[in-house]
Image (cartoon, rainbow, N blue to C red; front, side, top):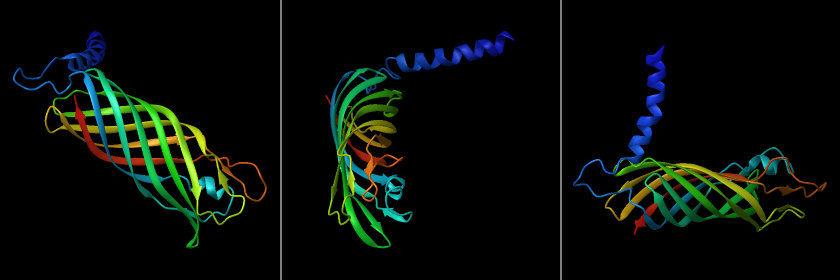
Length: 210
């Protein structure tokens, strides 16, 4: 019985040792060094908004995906831990019914994030947790009374991979889910929807490490 228990106990110890190891090779740059970073890139937003509009319109509402961008500034405090502020802009989730365009929905999210990083030399996967606010703007709206909450609390949950091209240039890809508390207002009977406005963002970009 002791061997299985010992093996289970050794797994987290080995993982912690990996995270705390100073360098894999003496002649390799320290890609996990502490310091500031600045980055940005392109974002593609997949909507998970349709159920919120279905609640107040009809069941065949279609919401399109959209392009945007993101930018961030952060500080890597430890080899496995970083803190950052992020701004994300998604231009136009088009809302339509049976091919008739009803409105455009723009989303802007500002969040403070924590990254938990596996410092595996040049290739460093991470888990991102964030909390902030999302600001929705409804434009070109042809449905009288159709409104959305402009500002709302939001949470961010994501995963990603940073690849160090050089000690100072990082190419990154990732996927985040942004869940907000924003509601859609019922244009006919008042009240709000049971579903809230949220989206999934795929992003790719470049960070500069200092």
